[in-house]
Image (cartoon, rainbow, N blue to C red):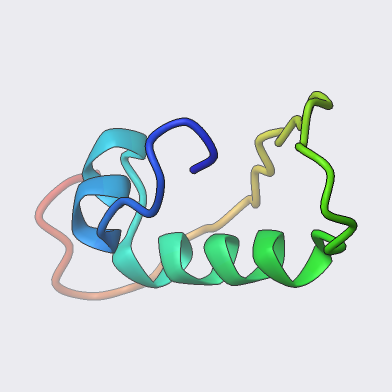
Length: 65
């Protein structure tokens, strides 16, 4: 965001492989947490993956096992 300016949500979601809603949420969480000090942002920001176990056992109509 800082190098390219504001990229449209559709392009951002395609680049990162996430939904448009997730891209929207991440953008606003990042922007809300940046404090306006007038200085350039030159720090490192990291985002880790979060995995949730999800079972569809017993769900009818699945096309795969």
